[in-house]
Amino acid sequence: MSILEKFAALNNRYDHLKQVGADPFAVKFDDIISCVEGVVNGKKTLLFGTNNYLGLTFDDEAKAESIEAIRRHGTGTTGSRIANGSYKGHQELERALADFYGHTHCMVFSTGYQANLGMISTLVGKDDHLFLDADSHASIYDGSRLGHAPVVRFRHNNPDDLAKRLRRMGDQPGDKLIVVEGIYSMLGDTAPLKEFVDVKREYGAYLMVDEAHSMGVLGEHGRGLAEREGVEDDVDFVVGTFSKSLASVGGFCVSSLEGFEILRLASRPYMFTASLPPAIISSTLSALRTLRAEPQRRTKLTANSRRFYTGLRAAGFHVGPECSPIVAVMVEQPEVAVMFWKRLLEEGMYLNLALPPATPNSSAFMRSSVSAAHTDEQIDFAVALMTRVGRELGLLPEENNVCAFPGPTAVFSGERLGATAATARALPQGAGAAAGMA
Image 1 (spheres, one colour):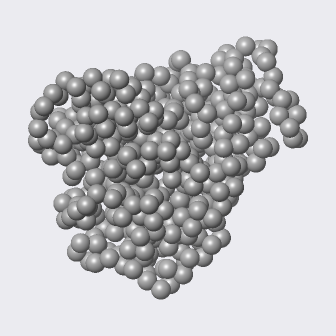
Image 2 (image 1 turned 90 degrees about the vertical axis):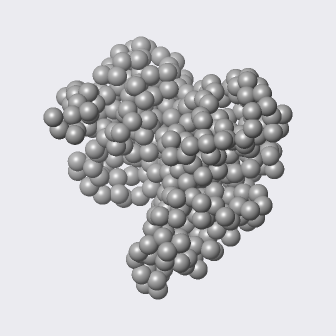
Image 3 (image 1 turned 90 degrees about the horizontal axis):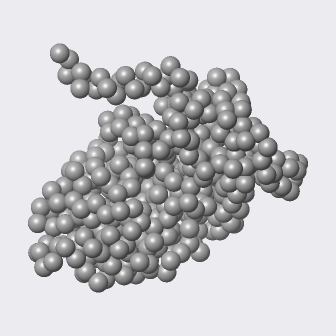
Protein backbone atom coordinates (compact mmCIF):
# COMPACT_ATOMS: atom_id res chain seq x y z
CA MET A 1 0.00 0.00 0.00
CA SER A 2 1.44 3.37 -1.02
CA ILE A 3 1.96 6.20 1.44
CA LEU A 4 -0.26 8.23 -0.93
CA GLU A 5 -3.19 5.81 -0.63
CA LYS A 6 -4.71 7.98 2.09
CA PHE A 7 -5.54 10.55 -0.61
CA ALA A 8 -7.56 8.09 -2.73
CA ALA A 9 -10.93 9.66 -1.92
CA LEU A 10 -9.64 13.16 -2.71
CA ASN A 11 -8.09 11.90 -5.92
CA ASN A 12 -11.37 10.31 -7.00
CA ARG A 13 -13.25 13.56 -6.41
CA TYR A 14 -10.61 15.48 -8.33
CA ASP A 15 -10.78 13.04 -11.27
CA HIS A 16 -14.56 13.40 -11.36
CA LEU A 17 -14.21 17.17 -11.36
CA LYS A 18 -11.87 17.07 -14.35
CA GLN A 19 -14.27 14.80 -16.23
CA VAL A 20 -17.06 17.35 -15.85
CA GLY A 21 -15.00 20.16 -17.33
CA ALA A 22 -11.63 21.85 -17.53
CA ASP A 23 -9.45 21.66 -14.43
CA PRO A 24 -10.20 24.84 -12.44
CA PHE A 25 -7.13 24.33 -10.23
CA ALA A 26 -4.57 24.08 -13.02
CA VAL A 27 -5.25 27.08 -15.23
CA LYS A 28 -2.18 28.05 -17.25
CA PHE A 29 -1.71 31.57 -18.56
CA ASP A 30 0.09 31.93 -21.86
CA ASP A 31 0.71 35.58 -21.02
CA ILE A 32 -0.34 38.32 -18.62
CA ILE A 33 -1.06 41.50 -20.56
CA SER A 34 -2.11 43.84 -17.77
CA CYS A 35 -3.62 43.90 -14.29
CA VAL A 36 -6.95 42.76 -15.68
CA GLU A 37 -6.15 40.90 -18.92
CA GLY A 38 -4.31 37.70 -19.73
CA VAL A 39 -4.12 35.02 -22.40
CA VAL A 40 -5.47 31.51 -21.72
CA ASN A 41 -5.32 28.81 -24.39
CA GLY A 42 -4.45 31.48 -26.93
CA LYS A 43 -7.53 33.57 -26.11
CA LYS A 44 -7.51 37.05 -24.60
CA THR A 45 -9.18 36.70 -21.21
CA LEU A 46 -10.62 39.17 -18.74
CA LEU A 47 -9.24 38.56 -15.24
CA PHE A 48 -11.70 38.65 -12.36
CA GLY A 49 -9.82 36.30 -10.08
CA THR A 50 -6.57 37.98 -9.07
CA ASN A 51 -7.10 39.88 -5.76
CA ASN A 52 -5.32 42.75 -7.54
CA TYR A 53 -7.52 45.27 -5.76
CA LEU A 54 -5.65 48.49 -6.52
CA GLY A 55 -4.30 47.37 -9.90
CA LEU A 56 -0.62 47.82 -8.98
CA THR A 57 1.04 44.73 -10.47
CA PHE A 58 2.06 46.70 -13.56
CA ASP A 59 2.78 49.99 -11.79
CA ASP A 60 5.72 51.62 -13.58
CA GLU A 61 7.37 53.00 -10.45
CA ALA A 62 7.12 49.70 -8.59
CA LYS A 63 8.61 47.82 -11.55
CA ALA A 64 11.47 50.28 -11.91
CA GLU A 65 12.35 50.15 -8.22
CA SER A 66 12.20 46.36 -8.22
CA ILE A 67 14.58 46.16 -11.19
CA GLU A 68 17.00 48.63 -9.61
CA ALA A 69 17.00 46.60 -6.38
CA ILE A 70 18.08 43.51 -8.31
CA ARG A 71 20.88 45.44 -9.98
CA ARG A 72 22.16 46.78 -6.67
CA HIS A 73 21.50 43.92 -4.24
CA GLY A 74 21.05 40.75 -6.30
CA THR A 75 18.19 38.34 -6.67
CA GLY A 76 17.86 36.88 -3.18
CA THR A 77 18.97 36.84 0.44
CA THR A 78 19.73 33.07 0.51
CA GLY A 79 18.65 32.70 4.12
CA SER A 80 16.66 33.93 7.08
CA ARG A 81 17.12 37.31 8.71
CA ILE A 82 18.12 35.63 11.97
CA ALA A 83 20.93 33.68 10.27
CA ASN A 84 21.92 35.93 7.36
CA GLY A 85 21.01 39.35 8.71
CA SER A 86 18.51 41.98 7.60
CA TYR A 87 18.91 44.10 4.51
CA LYS A 88 18.31 47.81 4.78
CA GLY A 89 15.12 47.39 2.77
CA HIS A 90 13.60 44.94 5.29
CA GLN A 91 13.91 47.50 8.05
CA GLU A 92 12.67 50.34 5.86
CA LEU A 93 9.55 48.36 4.97
CA GLU A 94 8.87 47.50 8.60
CA ARG A 95 9.19 51.15 9.62
CA ALA A 96 6.93 52.22 6.76
CA LEU A 97 4.23 49.70 7.69
CA ALA A 98 4.39 50.59 11.39
CA ASP A 99 4.03 54.25 10.47
CA PHE A 100 1.14 53.54 8.10
CA TYR A 101 -0.80 51.77 10.85
CA GLY A 102 0.26 54.09 13.65
CA HIS A 103 1.97 51.30 15.58
CA THR A 104 5.46 51.09 17.04
CA HIS A 105 6.45 47.59 15.89
CA CYS A 106 6.31 45.54 12.71
CA MET A 107 7.56 42.12 11.64
CA VAL A 108 7.69 41.20 7.95
CA PHE A 109 7.25 37.59 6.90
CA SER A 110 7.93 35.90 3.57
CA THR A 111 4.22 35.23 2.90
CA GLY A 112 0.93 36.30 4.39
CA TYR A 113 0.28 32.66 5.23
CA GLN A 114 3.44 32.63 7.32
CA ALA A 115 2.44 35.84 9.07
CA ASN A 116 -0.64 34.11 10.47
CA LEU A 117 1.26 30.88 11.04
CA GLY A 118 4.07 32.67 12.86
CA MET A 119 2.01 35.01 15.01
CA ILE A 120 -0.80 32.69 16.09
CA SER A 121 1.44 29.74 16.89
CA THR A 122 3.73 31.96 18.96
CA LEU A 123 1.42 34.33 20.82
CA VAL A 124 -0.62 31.68 22.63
CA GLY A 125 0.79 28.60 24.35
CA LYS A 126 -0.60 25.48 26.00
CA ASP A 127 -1.83 27.42 29.03
CA ASP A 128 -3.62 30.05 26.93
CA HIS A 129 -6.83 30.01 24.88
CA LEU A 130 -7.38 30.76 21.19
CA PHE A 131 -10.79 31.83 19.85
CA LEU A 132 -11.32 31.56 16.08
CA ASP A 133 -14.19 32.56 13.84
CA ALA A 134 -15.53 29.36 12.28
CA ASP A 135 -14.95 30.71 8.75
CA SER A 136 -11.30 31.61 9.36
CA HIS A 137 -8.78 31.28 6.56
CA ALA A 138 -6.72 28.10 6.30
CA SER A 139 -3.57 29.94 7.43
CA ILE A 140 -5.29 30.88 10.70
CA TYR A 141 -6.32 27.30 11.36
CA ASP A 142 -2.86 26.04 10.46
CA GLY A 143 -1.34 28.56 12.86
CA SER A 144 -3.56 27.16 15.60
CA ARG A 145 -2.37 23.64 14.80
CA LEU A 146 1.29 24.61 14.90
CA GLY A 147 0.78 26.15 18.34
CA HIS A 148 -0.24 24.40 21.53
CA ALA A 149 -3.16 26.49 22.78
CA PRO A 150 -6.61 24.93 23.09
CA VAL A 151 -8.81 26.21 20.24
CA VAL A 152 -12.41 27.36 20.64
CA ARG A 153 -14.41 28.10 17.48
CA PHE A 154 -17.31 30.52 17.57
CA ARG A 155 -20.07 31.02 15.01
CA HIS A 156 -19.11 33.13 12.03
CA ASN A 157 -19.44 36.86 12.72
CA ASN A 158 -21.36 36.17 15.95
CA PRO A 159 -20.15 38.29 18.90
CA ASP A 160 -22.82 36.83 21.18
CA ASP A 161 -21.56 33.30 20.56
CA LEU A 162 -18.00 34.46 21.24
CA ALA A 163 -19.09 36.08 24.49
CA LYS A 164 -20.90 32.92 25.54
CA ARG A 165 -17.81 30.80 24.97
CA LEU A 166 -15.59 33.27 26.81
CA ARG A 167 -18.07 33.33 29.68
CA ARG A 168 -17.85 29.55 29.96
CA MET A 169 -14.11 29.89 30.55
CA GLY A 170 -14.89 31.49 33.88
CA ASP A 171 -11.74 32.34 35.80
CA GLN A 172 -9.50 29.86 34.02
CA PRO A 173 -5.92 31.20 33.90
CA GLY A 174 -4.07 32.04 30.71
CA ASP A 175 -4.26 34.69 28.03
CA LYS A 176 -7.12 34.73 25.55
CA LEU A 177 -6.56 35.67 21.89
CA ILE A 178 -9.47 36.34 19.52
CA VAL A 179 -8.77 36.17 15.78
CA VAL A 180 -11.14 37.59 13.15
CA GLU A 181 -10.77 38.84 9.58
CA GLY A 182 -11.52 42.24 8.07
CA ILE A 183 -13.04 40.97 4.82
CA TYR A 184 -13.56 37.22 4.61
CA SER A 185 -11.98 35.87 1.48
CA MET A 186 -14.72 33.51 0.39
CA LEU A 187 -17.96 35.52 0.56
CA GLY A 188 -16.61 39.05 0.92
CA ASP A 189 -18.45 39.82 4.16
CA THR A 190 -16.90 41.94 6.93
CA ALA A 191 -16.63 41.24 10.64
CA PRO A 192 -18.85 43.16 13.12
CA LEU A 193 -15.67 44.55 14.59
CA LYS A 194 -17.15 47.07 17.02
CA GLU A 195 -19.13 44.31 18.70
CA PHE A 196 -16.09 42.03 18.84
CA VAL A 197 -14.12 44.85 20.46
CA ASP A 198 -16.83 45.17 23.12
CA VAL A 199 -16.55 41.45 23.88
CA LYS A 200 -12.76 41.65 23.96
CA ARG A 201 -12.89 44.47 26.50
CA GLU A 202 -15.45 42.77 28.70
CA TYR A 203 -13.43 39.57 29.02
CA GLY A 204 -9.93 41.02 29.02
CA ALA A 205 -8.85 39.25 25.84
CA TYR A 206 -6.44 40.25 23.07
CA LEU A 207 -7.68 40.84 19.53
CA MET A 208 -5.95 40.08 16.23
CA VAL A 209 -7.50 41.22 12.94
CA ASP A 210 -6.37 39.74 9.64
CA GLU A 211 -6.72 42.65 7.19
CA ALA A 212 -5.39 40.69 4.19
CA HIS A 213 -8.36 41.53 1.95
CA SER A 214 -9.29 44.85 3.57
CA MET A 215 -5.92 46.61 3.51
CA GLY A 216 -6.02 49.22 0.77
CA VAL A 217 -9.75 48.56 0.39
CA LEU A 218 -11.49 49.88 3.53
CA GLY A 219 -10.97 52.94 5.67
CA GLU A 220 -10.29 56.58 4.83
CA HIS A 221 -6.57 55.86 4.47
CA GLY A 222 -6.85 52.22 3.41
CA ARG A 223 -5.80 50.68 6.72
CA GLY A 224 -8.71 48.28 6.67
CA LEU A 225 -11.84 47.43 8.62
CA ALA A 226 -10.47 48.57 12.00
CA GLU A 227 -9.92 52.05 10.57
CA ARG A 228 -13.35 52.15 8.95
CA GLU A 229 -15.03 51.14 12.20
CA GLY A 230 -12.96 53.52 14.34
CA VAL A 231 -11.55 50.81 16.64
CA GLU A 232 -7.86 50.76 15.69
CA ASP A 233 -6.75 51.50 19.26
CA ASP A 234 -8.56 48.36 20.45
CA VAL A 235 -6.87 45.98 18.00
CA ASP A 236 -3.72 44.50 19.52
CA PHE A 237 -2.33 42.87 16.38
CA VAL A 238 -2.97 43.58 12.70
CA VAL A 239 -1.86 40.89 10.28
CA GLY A 240 -1.83 41.38 6.53
CA THR A 241 -0.33 40.40 3.22
CA PHE A 242 1.48 42.07 0.34
CA SER A 243 -0.09 39.80 -2.28
CA LYS A 244 -3.39 41.67 -2.61
CA SER A 245 -3.44 45.49 -2.62
CA LEU A 246 0.37 45.75 -2.56
CA ALA A 247 0.73 43.52 -5.61
CA SER A 248 3.75 41.45 -4.56
CA VAL A 249 4.25 38.68 -1.99
CA GLY A 250 4.91 38.61 1.73
CA GLY A 251 3.15 39.32 4.99
CA PHE A 252 3.39 41.35 8.17
CA CYS A 253 2.16 41.94 11.68
CA VAL A 254 2.05 45.35 13.37
CA SER A 255 1.48 46.04 17.05
CA SER A 256 2.28 48.52 19.81
CA LEU A 257 2.55 45.97 22.62
CA GLU A 258 5.65 46.42 24.72
CA GLY A 259 8.14 43.59 24.26
CA PHE A 260 6.90 42.73 20.75
CA GLU A 261 10.43 42.46 19.33
CA ILE A 262 11.17 39.25 21.25
CA LEU A 263 8.80 37.48 18.86
CA ARG A 264 11.57 37.54 16.26
CA LEU A 265 13.37 34.96 18.41
CA ALA A 266 10.24 33.04 19.36
CA SER A 267 8.39 32.67 16.05
CA ARG A 268 9.70 29.65 14.17
CA PRO A 269 8.10 30.57 10.79
CA TYR A 270 9.96 33.89 11.03
CA MET A 271 13.27 32.46 12.26
CA PHE A 272 13.63 29.55 9.87
CA THR A 273 12.36 30.95 6.56
CA ALA A 274 14.43 32.78 3.96
CA SER A 275 13.69 36.50 3.98
CA LEU A 276 12.09 38.38 1.12
CA PRO A 277 14.44 39.28 -1.78
CA PRO A 278 15.36 42.92 -2.46
CA ALA A 279 13.17 43.19 -5.55
CA ILE A 280 10.04 42.26 -3.59
CA ILE A 281 10.87 44.60 -0.72
CA SER A 282 11.39 47.52 -3.12
CA SER A 283 8.20 46.99 -5.12
CA THR A 284 6.20 46.59 -1.91
CA LEU A 285 7.56 49.84 -0.50
CA SER A 286 6.65 51.57 -3.76
CA ALA A 287 3.13 50.13 -3.73
CA LEU A 288 2.64 51.21 -0.12
CA ARG A 289 3.58 54.77 -1.06
CA THR A 290 1.11 54.67 -3.94
CA LEU A 291 -1.62 53.29 -1.68
CA ARG A 292 -1.14 56.26 0.63
CA ALA A 293 -0.78 58.89 -2.09
CA GLU A 294 -3.63 57.86 -4.41
CA PRO A 295 -6.89 57.39 -2.48
CA GLN A 296 -8.73 57.69 -5.79
CA ARG A 297 -7.84 54.05 -6.42
CA ARG A 298 -9.99 53.03 -3.45
CA THR A 299 -12.78 55.26 -4.70
CA LYS A 300 -12.69 53.59 -8.10
CA LEU A 301 -12.49 50.14 -6.50
CA THR A 302 -15.58 50.87 -4.44
CA ALA A 303 -17.50 52.06 -7.50
CA ASN A 304 -16.41 49.04 -9.54
CA SER A 305 -17.40 46.64 -6.76
CA ARG A 306 -20.84 48.21 -6.47
CA ARG A 307 -21.36 48.12 -10.25
CA PHE A 308 -20.48 44.44 -10.46
CA TYR A 309 -22.29 43.30 -7.30
CA THR A 310 -25.53 45.14 -8.03
CA GLY A 311 -25.48 44.00 -11.65
CA LEU A 312 -25.24 40.35 -10.68
CA ARG A 313 -27.85 40.69 -7.98
CA ALA A 314 -30.24 42.46 -10.36
CA ALA A 315 -29.84 39.58 -12.80
CA GLY A 316 -31.14 37.21 -10.14
CA PHE A 317 -27.94 35.56 -8.96
CA HIS A 318 -27.59 34.60 -5.32
CA VAL A 319 -24.62 36.77 -4.34
CA GLY A 320 -22.77 37.18 -1.04
CA PRO A 321 -24.22 39.10 1.92
CA GLU A 322 -22.28 42.35 1.39
CA CYS A 323 -20.99 44.45 -1.45
CA SER A 324 -17.19 44.30 -1.43
CA PRO A 325 -14.44 43.65 -4.00
CA ILE A 326 -15.01 39.94 -3.35
CA VAL A 327 -18.19 38.86 -5.10
CA ALA A 328 -19.35 35.28 -4.65
CA VAL A 329 -22.15 33.61 -6.61
CA MET A 330 -23.76 30.52 -5.12
CA VAL A 331 -24.65 27.58 -7.35
CA GLU A 332 -26.56 24.70 -5.75
CA GLN A 333 -25.13 21.86 -7.83
CA PRO A 334 -21.31 21.48 -7.97
CA GLU A 335 -21.43 19.95 -11.45
CA VAL A 336 -23.31 22.97 -12.77
CA ALA A 337 -20.84 25.28 -11.05
CA VAL A 338 -17.98 23.52 -12.84
CA MET A 339 -19.72 23.85 -16.21
CA PHE A 340 -20.46 27.50 -15.50
CA TRP A 341 -16.81 28.19 -14.68
CA LYS A 342 -15.65 26.31 -17.79
CA ARG A 343 -18.04 28.19 -20.11
CA LEU A 344 -16.93 31.56 -18.76
CA LEU A 345 -13.27 30.70 -19.27
CA GLU A 346 -13.95 29.52 -22.81
CA GLU A 347 -15.67 32.83 -23.57
CA GLY A 348 -12.94 35.01 -22.15
CA MET A 349 -13.52 35.44 -18.40
CA TYR A 350 -11.36 33.97 -15.65
CA LEU A 351 -12.49 33.50 -12.06
CA ASN A 352 -12.24 30.87 -9.35
CA LEU A 353 -14.36 27.92 -8.44
CA ALA A 354 -15.15 26.91 -4.84
CA LEU A 355 -16.56 23.49 -4.07
CA PRO A 356 -17.72 21.63 -0.94
CA PRO A 357 -16.79 20.25 1.51
CA ALA A 358 -14.35 23.10 2.11
CA THR A 359 -16.74 25.99 1.47
CA PRO A 360 -18.96 27.83 3.99
CA ASN A 361 -22.23 25.92 4.45
CA SER A 362 -20.92 23.31 1.97
CA SER A 363 -22.07 25.49 -0.91
CA ALA A 364 -20.67 25.49 -4.42
CA PHE A 365 -19.93 28.93 -5.73
CA MET A 366 -17.73 31.08 -7.87
CA ARG A 367 -15.76 33.95 -6.40
CA SER A 368 -14.52 37.00 -8.20
CA SER A 369 -12.31 39.84 -7.05
CA VAL A 370 -12.87 43.25 -8.58
CA SER A 371 -9.97 45.60 -9.32
CA ALA A 372 -9.70 49.37 -9.45
CA ALA A 373 -8.12 48.77 -12.87
CA HIS A 374 -11.31 47.30 -14.37
CA THR A 375 -13.13 49.64 -16.69
CA ASP A 376 -16.90 50.08 -16.65
CA GLU A 377 -17.03 48.35 -20.03
CA GLN A 378 -15.14 45.33 -18.71
CA ILE A 379 -17.45 45.01 -15.73
CA ASP A 380 -20.51 45.35 -17.94
CA PHE A 381 -19.12 42.68 -20.27
CA ALA A 382 -18.58 40.32 -17.33
CA VAL A 383 -22.08 40.86 -15.97
CA ALA A 384 -23.66 40.37 -19.39
CA LEU A 385 -21.60 37.24 -20.10
CA MET A 386 -22.43 35.66 -16.77
CA THR A 387 -26.11 36.45 -17.21
CA ARG A 388 -26.24 34.84 -20.63
CA VAL A 389 -24.36 31.71 -19.56
CA GLY A 390 -26.37 31.51 -16.36
CA ARG A 391 -29.59 31.48 -18.35
CA GLU A 392 -28.28 28.88 -20.77
CA LEU A 393 -27.41 26.61 -17.82
CA GLY A 394 -30.81 27.11 -16.22
CA LEU A 395 -29.50 29.12 -13.27
CA LEU A 396 -31.63 32.10 -14.23
CA PRO A 397 -35.03 32.36 -15.90
CA GLU A 398 -35.11 33.22 -19.56
CA GLU A 399 -36.64 36.59 -18.79
CA ASN A 400 -35.27 38.65 -15.94
CA ASN A 401 -35.21 42.20 -14.72
CA VAL A 402 -32.63 44.20 -16.61
CA CYS A 403 -30.21 46.53 -14.94
CA ALA A 404 -29.23 49.63 -16.90
CA PHE A 405 -25.75 51.09 -16.60
CA PRO A 406 -24.28 54.13 -18.31
CA GLY A 407 -21.72 53.54 -21.02
CA PRO A 408 -21.42 51.62 -24.29
CA THR A 409 -23.31 48.60 -22.93
CA ALA A 410 -26.55 50.41 -22.24
CA VAL A 411 -28.81 47.67 -20.91
CA PHE A 412 -27.99 44.18 -19.77
CA SER A 413 -28.82 41.73 -17.02
CA GLY A 414 -26.33 41.29 -14.20
CA GLU A 415 -24.50 38.08 -13.68
CA ARG A 416 -22.45 36.59 -10.96
CA LEU A 417 -19.02 35.03 -10.97
CA GLY A 418 -16.27 33.57 -8.83
CA ALA A 419 -12.53 34.11 -8.32
CA THR A 420 -9.14 33.19 -6.94
CA ALA A 421 -9.16 33.26 -3.19
CA ALA A 422 -12.01 30.80 -3.23
CA THR A 423 -9.67 28.07 -4.29
CA ALA A 424 -7.85 27.79 -0.98
CA ARG A 425 -10.96 26.52 0.73
CA ALA A 426 -12.52 24.99 -2.38
CA LEU A 427 -10.79 21.66 -1.82
CA PRO A 428 -10.40 19.60 1.34
CA GLN A 429 -7.31 20.07 3.46
CA GLY A 430 -4.20 18.94 1.65
CA ALA A 431 -5.39 19.82 -1.83
CA GLY A 432 -3.07 22.41 -3.31
CA ALA A 433 -4.81 25.48 -4.67
CA ALA A 434 -4.60 29.24 -4.93
CA ALA A 435 -5.01 30.76 -1.48
CA GLY A 436 -6.74 33.78 -0.18
CA MET A 437 -3.60 34.78 1.67
CA ALA A 438 -0.76 33.49 -0.44
